[in-house]
Image 1: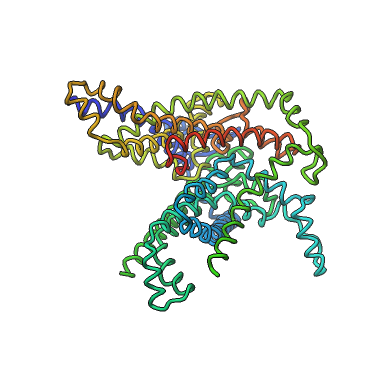
Image 2 (image 1 turned 60 degrees about the horizontal axis):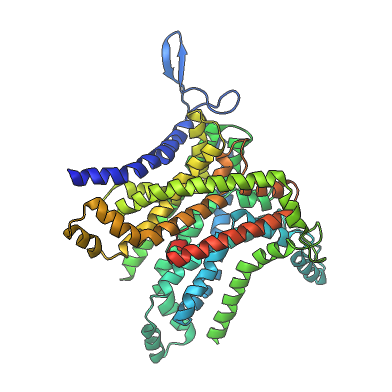
Length: 296
Length: 255
């Protein structure tokens, strides 16, 4: 009994806090997606009172609105494409770096990992702002690129406020999430396997594709999940760097809550986003599980 | 050949990670209104910053929120971390991990609806309550990892020698895991002072924080004053993170 008391006393307060400030808000948002919008923004009452008594004032309108106009599905698809491109580029850039760290002398490894982590502890907005400077029309980078394009007679291109700027910055902010799980996996590989492959006549290319790469698949799956899911909900990057062409689903959610003040529709979008992310991650996990069991 | 190629691509990726931040810092000392070409060295933008009342007010708010949120979440997070380590629980692990796993914007909008539903005026209090909610999980993870690295026989020995469970915790376990708790508190402070997304939805019109202030400056009129405040904020974060990583090497990988 005393043991149970201790358990409740210690786990009770954090459990209670997270129920009040995480679980209940989430439930309220799910309910909000079935409510009507209030006349002046916010939400209309759940219960309506009239001559016949109180009755529920709920609707599927927000979800119907989502499917009635292809523009919303299109925005979802676009967000998905941005997230896929970002994830793929992160993988391409992170792999050599993770491999380099894993194969460097063990006394340098912690420092090299710390160097990957530090930038992503700097403020999120500052990292976006940095790309605003780098891609701005007066920047040295823009000038150099346009000078180079000019040689081929291609007119000056604008970099800022384009989908390109959005994806580049998404890669930048998400890259460490790919490097860390990859490194954690690559570090554990037994170097004897590569020696054995070499003794058996495999060249560097074969050693990578037949030994290192297949063994690193769990690290790749972890990195892909860590990079992909947060990108789906990001709104600050497209908001600052994307202009009108670069917007993503997060921008629409933000707009419904703060500008259009259609909270039921904003809630419905948030729920569709969560469900979509869960389906993709669940599907990928199933796929990864099957691949792994199929290999054995 | 592949070794050189690997080293070259590794260095290129490090350059990609750091170049943008270096540019932000460099232009904070540039004697020009534009983030374009280097004109000359100046402290001007830092002086502008120090006489910018809205910015100072926002900095004050940020510090107050971060202090309160890190203090409260350290207490709750230490309890959660200890409970995760000591007992087999079903609900708590899910509650601790879920806010960290789902996109931040969803946490932000659901808290906004919640605060409006309970008629809480959006402002400092709503920001603090929200920050505590997402910091608890980070502290809990750091504390639990510190606990699992601890020699379990030490508190047991204290119990054998006649200490009550509370005495064993306070006099043996707590001092042993103190570095983990401090690292967790520093992380919570950093997360709180840096948070933009959740603050953006829960701040309302009344209260501003440094990230919100930076956001509105970026959106409306960019001057190197943004670079100056960014540089100071980065220095503060760098300091906190290096201290936290010294105390608990695994802690900073959690984010």
